[in-house]
Image (cartoon, rainbow, N blue to C red; front, side, top):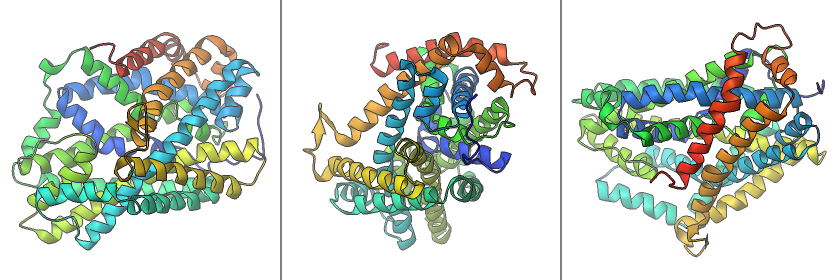
Length: 455
């Protein structure tokens, strides 16, 4: 097994869990999971989702852990070391490319969060529904403001990355993740105390098995795959900083629990407030940046100070979630450049920051200011989202499972899983069966689902 003794590493088990959980917890947990749960049978969807995490998410995460820790290098080199120089090494390069492209356009949405923190503090997004809707449209179509906020967010991320694994990523994760949970709990409590909040709780947790069909299963599979940041290079890169004593299966379980908990709490935060004012939640940016400001304005109209605090806390929460995810995405490309180009971490990070700022600028302009920035009938923003989310991620995950389940030496996989015999490895057989058979079939279904094969 190739190990680089001078390579940076996480300093504690808590740092491993919080940093990797921060990579998984992002904007998708706040709006996508609650909406999908509410639209696909409530608690029925949650049950199916948890099963999907167990059968797909955790085995895929452990697989990337194994490759990353075994290679003790950036994602591309880690796959190369596991593949022994064969063509399978290019799966690692695909992961790096995917993470790099996502960094560019994810910074744009992250910048929107910062703008809304600023606007919430200044009281600029209170008013009627039409004003809030036009506020979002005017802001995203502005040629300069969204770009500036995206660049600011990238340089905040840059500042964390240049400080290294322990001094930057781990330290910030230990600070940001508790803040995220505290903000979540504050808003959940305030939301659940509103009149008729029980309707929103019932909307999330009351099982409606009449809505369960094959599409619900596919949606749950897809959500489990994307929610845990599989095939973005983040998990593999972070695993390269794990120690030999890190229990990979236990860590993946802990991270999955944190990720699911944040998603469910997000539902308890959104639905009670929305139903309290008679607004049915929608998906995507319209929920986070249009519907919810209107919800906060109406729900806390009798308590304007509390409404002000909740609005600020909510968009600060979004910014924290976006930051922890963007840090992990940025690190994928930074580690790659640092090791493959043999340059310093600050220089590698600066290259990533500047190039992603350019990508982000074009993606932002394509969103409204310059609608001519499009390819294949999609804006650059939508194109990057489609290519990475619906093509690169499932393909990367599928190839990783095939590679680790059928190509990589089984002894190496078992040794990493059991920490070279120091752990019992009771669940190795189940894990390996999932990686060889269950995960490839599930991911293939997700990929086909993206292209509307199932109607």
